Image (cartoon, rainbow, N blue to C red; front, side):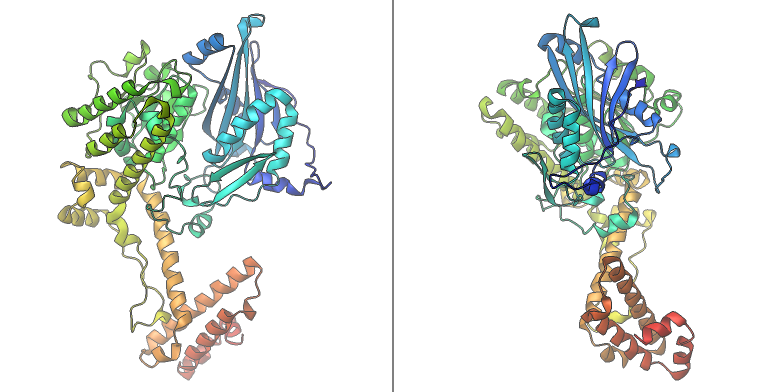
Length: 615
C-alpha cells in the first residue's frame, strides 16, 4: 500500500475570524478523517488524512485494508446498479509502541466507513472504489454512523472541502456528555443522539478508572430513556429475524465470553450483527475483544491462523465476510451465519407472509427442538462455502429456553406489509425489553455485594462507612444453589442454570463489570455517609463513644476534609468560603477537643493535621 500527501496542516478558522481555538474540541470526538482509494496496481492508497500525522504508518496500513468490502455481494451489486454505497465500521488496536504518548490500557481505533463502488465499462477492470472514513477512539455508533452517512456523499460531491467543513463544524461541538441526549450541528443538519453512559464503554477507550466511576451513577434498566449499550441503535429484529430461536443461546455465549465467529455476505450486515450481539447482554458491558469487520490483513490474523484445534481460542467476536475464514479459523467452537445473500436493501428482504412464516418456524424450533436446535452436525459451517444460509453451530449446551410468549408477540406486532418498517421497530423494542430484563434478573443475585448502606438510627456516621460485603465465588454459588435463580429465570431455564453462573464467574465479562459496579457502590456509600455527617451533630455521638471510636471518627472526618479540599481545588472552587467547610472543620475541632491531652499533643506532631486544626 502506498500513500499520497496528507491534508495540509492548516488552522481551523471560525466565522468570527478566530484561530484554531476550537480544534481541541475536535480531538475529544475524533482521531481524524481519511479517504482511501483502491488502485489496481498499488492497492489501497491513502489519499487524504486529516489532521496530518493522526495515524502512524502501521495504523494507516490497518485502516486502509479494513476500509474496503471483501464480499461476493458487492461485486455483483456494482454491475447491477452502476453505483453502490456501503456503510460499515471496524475496530482495530492502536499501534501505541510507535507513538510518543501512551496511556494505561490498550486503546482501540474505530473506523466508520462510507464505501462507494462505481461500475464503468470504460475504466480498467470495469470500475473503481473509494472509501471515506471517520476515525475515533470512542465507539459512538449513534453519532459516527449518521455522520459518515452524511459526510460520504458530500465528499464525492465536493471533495476535500467537505472534510474541512466537517472538521470546522465539529470543532464547535461541546465535549461528549455520556448518558445524555446531545444535538450536534453539522452545517444545517442536526445529529440528535443519546450517548450511552460512560460505564457501558468497553475497556480501552482511553478513559481512566476514575473517569468511569465518577460517571457511573447506577441507571435503572427500567429507565428506557437512557441507553444501556453502546450499540443500542442496532435493530435486533432486523438483524436476527431469521435466527430468532437462537437468540437465547447467543445471549449465553456473549454472557460467558465464548469465542464466536460471525459470517455475513456483506460488511454492513456483518458489523450490524456483531454490534447487535454485544447489545444483547445490556446492561452488562462487553469486555471481550470484538471486531465488527475482520480481514486477513488484520495484524491479529497471523496469531489466530497459527492456532491448532488443541489451542484455546481467546475470548473474541470476529465478524467476517470471506468464507476463507471458515477453513482458516475452523477451531472456533461457535459459528454464526447471518444475513441475506444478495440483499442490498434489508427493507425489501421479505413481505408479510414470508416474515410471519419465518417467525412461526422459529416458534416451532423453540418448542420442539430445544436444546438440540442446531443444524445437523455432519453439515457443519463449511456448507457455507457453497451457499450462504442463516444458521448457528455451537458446542454450547444452553441453560435458558427461548421465550415463546415473546416470539408470539412479535408475530402479532406485524399487521400489514405497508408498515413493515414500523413493525420492525416494535419488534426490536420487544426483544430489547426482554433481553434487558433477562440480563438484569441474571445479575440480580450479585446485588447484595454492590449495595451501598446508610447509617442506621443511633449509629454514628462519623465513624465512616463499613466495607462492602466480601465476595467469594464458591460461597456465592453455594448460596445461590440453595435459594435458586429467582422466579423470572426459573421459568426460562433448565437444570444447567447454576453452571451458567459458574461459567460467567470464570469468563472475561464478570470481573470488569463487578469491579466497576463495586467502585460505584463504594463511591455512593461514601457520599451517603458524608451527607449524614453534614446533617448530624457530632457532639451528640461523642458522649457515647469509646476513646478508640473517637480517634476513628477524627481520622474519618480528616479524610473527608482532605477529599473535599482536593475536589474543590480541581473544580476551581474556594472551599474555605463554603458552608461545608465550616461544618467539617467544626466537627474536626470538636472531636479533637474530646480527645485526651496526650493524644492531642501527639496529633499536633503531624504538620498536615496541625494545619487542618488551624483552618
